[in-house]
Length: 336
Image (tube, rainbow, N blue to C red; front, side, top):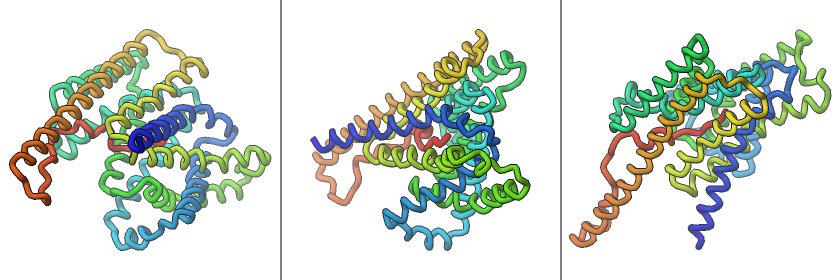
């Protein structure tokens, strides 16, 4: 019973995290007339404050001293902080400039980009269905490029920046709160310096926009941290395969908002491109679920065989062999 309750709670946390990320396009327009860079700077500054308070309450500070003694990890965190700032800034700009649908496409194709990076940078091998999915994704980008009259640069930049962020996070291997604290700490000085510079020039909107506007800018810290906390709670309660399915909630919500709420145009060629992307993601998801079932069956078979053979207790007969990058698309924390 306890296990079922934990999984149910995990599903709720996961749906809450991805639901909030999917509905965040409703929040960024409220911050106008602040520009995308000013909003981004506030998000960096206030996120550090929120995460710092959370770590203080949880008394999780031991990792700081260990991190300082690891320059390679610090360098990876600096890379992660840089690419996620590009991702955040571009996403805010795209929402506030009528490109919500194109932004959602970036997060739809992100799993395909992640797999491609795994092959090109990590030497991972793909199964036939994964190759088909990647090829279908490339065809979708080609169709969309013809429809737009140019490649969908916003979508591609969002997808590649977030895939690079995921790769850096994988190498760092820190928890969600800790890694966000480290990343925002790296970003804090330039972000705060930019806000001070805006204030000196008289272009800052934090105080001139009124108390309500200032409160909304401060709330960017909560908008960043709360979904991440929910995601972390989900990640320890449900399998990665379940998280892999839940992750599509965010771009689905974003796409729905772009079409139904913001009334962005969807000509036939754009529907065709999105349709190909959805076919690719369906293939990818089906293959991942099938591989997960095979791995569980193989683990059970090895466990039964080991029990019959009297394998020593210290051995690990249940670990299945590596079968490619089926779970590669699930090893990330989307933070649009």
